[in-house]
Image 1 (cartoon, one colour):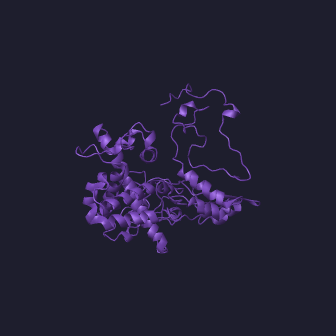
Image 2 (image 1 turned 120 degrees about the horizontal axis):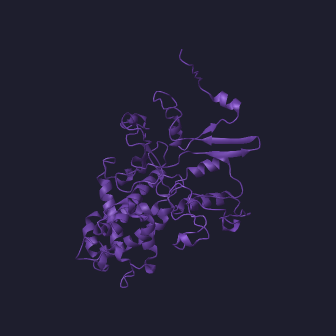
Image 3 (image 1 turned 90 degrees about the vertical axis):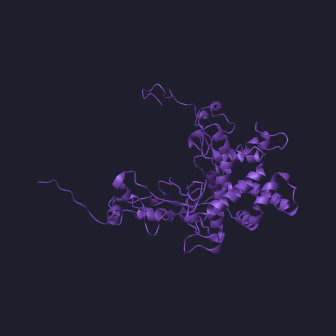
Length: 401
């Protein structure tokens, strides 16, 4: 903690050349940011050797990458609707990095099923999974066919393609949740650290690094070329490999989803993401304050909260829990603000996850939340006349006699 006396404050000013800067160009006439490391101060693994210390924890970068993709596609001009659409973007770029390893593992499993003992590290698992062949194949096929759009799929207007993407989104997040645990939970248990979330590492980044860069790591097994972290310390008669753990994690994900009451069906085509990926705006007031949550506990239309699209590291921030059935999320955009610099004056559009009134009987108690959850907006009046015209009632307070 800082002492609060000023002794820890930076003295003086940074020289201009030490301040991160970006230059607009004809091919990149825009700036974007989504909490990623804009200046590259952590790219070498040491945030303390930069010209100026800017921080050590940043977003993983997929959100910024997706915004850059969208802006690049727009060229030199973006409309108000373009920016609203961009704020609602729910493409899960992480899926494109993880799923090639699932494809490789499944191909080897198919070889083992066809020719027993041809893939010796998968032989025991192949025998175990043989009764579930079609389930495993269907799940993998759905993830491979996924467009990477993190669709909710529960809306009445959802197309068949959106529903299919919603199922794949469910399967992907359930799978990587199991995979993260398979990689490191046994080591944490051995260190008496259990499942503590404050261990100080990023499971997503760690898992991807071990998948993509095993040859550069100190945990590399020279015989297999893979990380020794894939071995399950709870078993002593076998050394599990990367593909073994990838496939076992997929099956465990299926088992957990099959047991989820929200689905209550083994029909994988009905496992829509929005049924479990939900959000509830919970009141910070204890006790009776629970009545201020939106939607309330026990809400008949939204019993689990508002169904939402999204997933890990999407632009429309909605990072879920990764253990079925807890795929809900508790943090996201505090507002959806878009401003157009019109020649006649700026025009602002916004939505907040709540309302303008704390009175649960008021029509304005949750009207903002109903816009927010649907990625819709209302225009924010700016000029005095517009503010007066937008008023729905006037309250006059007088002193008591």
